[in-house]
Amino acid sequence: MLFDMLRREKLQQCTKEEWKAQWKSLFPPEHRDVPITYEGETRVAFVQINHYVMMLQDGLLMRATFFDVCEFFQKAGYHVVWLMRCTQDIQNGHLKLLENNGGKRCRWLWKRPTTNFDRWSTDQCRASIVLQWKPIPEGGLQNCNEQMLQRVIWSESDTPELLVPGRTRFTTAGAPATPAQLVRWLNGTALSEL
Image (cartoon, rainbow, N blue to C red):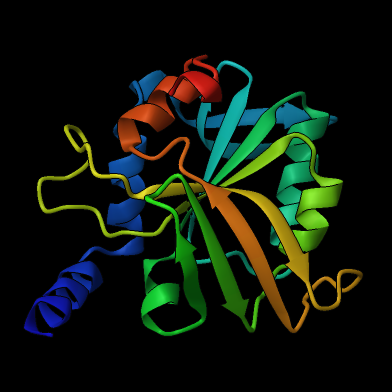
């Protein structure tokens, strides 16, 4: 109980900007905050490497933003990877881990979702959602081997046609599971080899 309270307190000390800076620091400076222009519009990718654009979201995504950003970068020719810190969503009870198969696969329930993952899974063939479901350890990400990531592979909402359904169940896979595996994936290693 005390450990959980201290862990929560430590998590709250890391601001959104500090969290984003930690993840971006895993990549060389030339791959961070890269402006991408398509049909006269420019948007900044937090990380752009190879054919990937990685966006960082502190918490599960808000309404419409996900789909608009995905569409822009996909039309520009990129596979979009959304890395979402959802540790606070787990703490406040909005996201519940239903089953954990040793980190290889997990089943989740998202109560009161703000974006329809079910719509994502059918409409977004060149997008991936990676959840950070455990806090970043005190030493940071540079040498972190903590299995803290899960990639969404399937979802089902109670009202799949709505942009914001009542609740969503989804399944995740543990590849990539660590920060180092995420970097290897974006540098071209196949998910099956992580």
